[in-house]
Picture 1: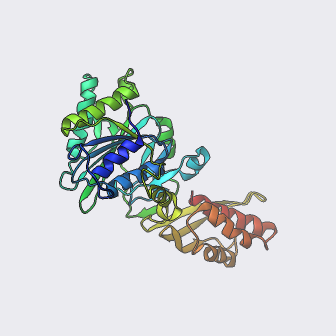
Picture 2: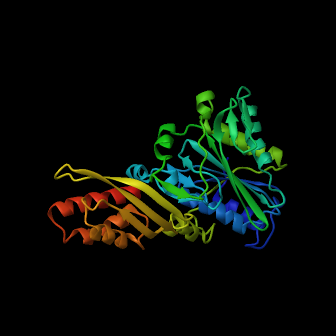
Picture 3: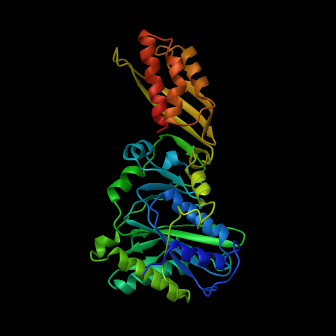
Length: 372
């Protein structure tokens, strides 16, 4: 029987610095399941627990799922990791988490597990042992093992779980995915670069062949999996916690969480925190009116998601250098964002006509397309 957010809040207060009183569960663990399927609320719930619960007194396991979303690591470049245009067409949001690691696709067929502990008790292999032991217990035929990279592989080579983590002064959390029945075609469609020619020191993702548990254990249902993980966590960490249902949208239970979720949704966090990068690529130009073709070289420097410099080398017989120079000048200081760039060049196009307008439009469209 699942209990409710109010009980969870009482337990968390009992083991945190945000309220008075004590709990009979002090020293034991908590197993929480989020009601929300909103990626920003669930990432904010992780931050809230990390900031407000005294993890030196108790550990916490949080189980959560999201509607389709792409989540990048703290130090990653979204334009290099995912197809932003495809995501917009499909209505799939992008989120940047606080932890490092690579890019992942979430949907309701993927389970996320977050293990919270004190910094002293931080042990990723022990956390992964909870998962592998639980899977072996309920499906002894599954060949699963954790790797030195903190992935979990099925049959020696198929990835069913990847990890990332964050360490604070006194606390830690380690979160990982677990593919139960994820849409692998959607995953493949969105986890590919938006922008050609990116040069960056951002953390790159490492592609791996993946599999769903359901492909190898067709009878494995969600409740059986969730119960097995909660029971194994209790066994591993000598806890007797009952899984507790929580709602991160309840500000009375999680004060301030909505503000954290809003920060995670903000462009300045999602894109503006991208490590500086450059773009060097060839633009293919077509004059739809005359069918003439040409190419140009684009070199941009981008800092904090904003175009810091832009150089366009366009053949003079395609477009006068004055116009390509004006386009470069208009883009500097704008966000590296197709919508913003398109709006910025509208005024530049307005006074032109005839062939110059067609060719300037082709150049503008090619530059905007680079931005995803």
